[in-house]
Image (cartoon, rainbow, N blue to C red):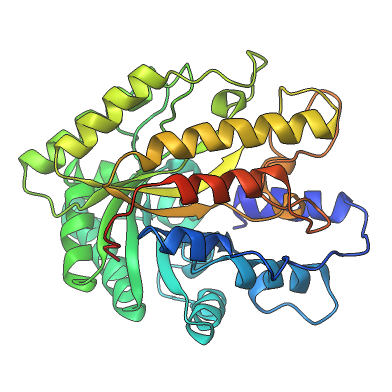
Length: 380
């Protein structure tokens, strides 16, 4: 099964014209990771196996050069998700995730893990959706889940932070999503995932990760995530923090309500509630969606950079935040190219580098935000 983000990003990249590539970065200026690290912040990006192992002279090889020049951490875009690792109930295939881990190790970079359980029925592998849990479904469901998390967690002891559970809350209703595992095990499925992750990865930070956003329309989602986190804490679930995906801009959705719909007061309230539970924060999937901005790339880049700076400045006010991960460094490979197309059909400009690997204003906005951030002890 191919994940939507991999498919859409690949399709969009093939549609873009090849160009004369720019140097990955002006080596006279500090990298984003060095600026972040000077304040105790880890900066990195998502990457695919194809980009990690690209042949010389290809666009993907140029992209990898940008990543290595700018980042101090990597996360697999799709390669550690169930559909990629588990072609069937009996098999684990680590070949693609191993390639990304090897790249990180070879360049002294840290590794994030994404994700041990994407609790969303649309993104379960077909075999798991159709799995026969037998006459004792709760027991068999727990066995299947624990076997997966133990094998994956133990296979990657170098992972410093795991998205243990991803997107378990329905964005519209704020209620927990139902999957074949929750039907077999009941609501305990999420608690079991965290307890098993602690056993399998005792040194890693364990996060719940979701796309609740500061945009209007995410009120129920935020409330549902708070309720979930409060339940974890009340039951003694070993959760360390919240992964905030941070796909911001244009409502973080397919709509035409505008570009900047941020509810900053409500968002601060949400973050205050989360950190008040003693949880850390990580920005796990940062990009800025420009769907509803004008066609002019100069205008778009300016507005994307301004919103990105405002968001990062707000987030970095919280000393509990010590990690910022971009969800891609170049517009050539952003998952947003094929999702929720612009009305004018133009390629989107959502990342710090453009499709020809030239730095954009968003890159400078990110640098400025790191420079302005208060120092903090880096915990991972």
